[in-house]
Image 1 (cartoon, rainbow over the protein chains, first blue to last red):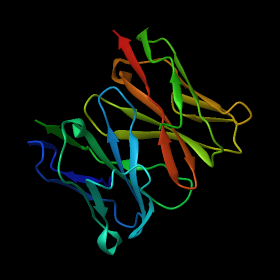
Image 2 (image 1 turned 120 degrees about the vertical axis):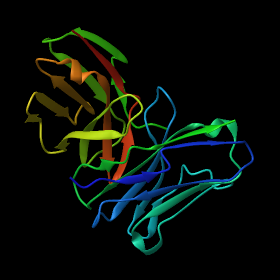
Image 3 (image 1 turned 30 degrees about the horizontal axis):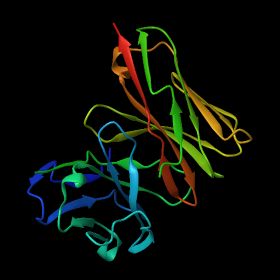
Length: 113
Length: 109
């Protein structure tokens, strides 16, 4: 069964450093989401792509976060500089356009120290 | 901000019992989806119900949707230890997927 690949699986970084996460969605999936999930809470949407275009980044802290999806395939989420409050699980999901469920990757667990 | 709220926040049941959890959402939707998350892992899609549907079944799962009350429920019948996980509803509107805070289900052997 096709999977959404995310790397790294775990990341520990010092505050004020830069960190990047990578996501490779399922082939043919036009929609790609990045979510942040704090322990004990539900996922919160950071950015949504349709192909290579950003559809919604209203919840993305743009002073420190950036996201891109060049060529409408894989995607990178970057944080610079990282803050202690950024410690969370970062989840990527992809899906087809329309009323279908989405496939999530295993996530990247970020710890900022 | 999160779109939905689940109730209860936590649920502990005996193996073989049924588990019911509820979800309320705030805006109009195209569909409502339920996901399961095992500790420290990604989310797994369980079932999707469209806004024009009222009930849907998949194996041991039964989902209902009441758009007039902006609410949904997920029933897991004959629970197993492997059903221990967090369950999230997600409201979908124009392909934006907004999650609630989840219900943590513990199934005791």
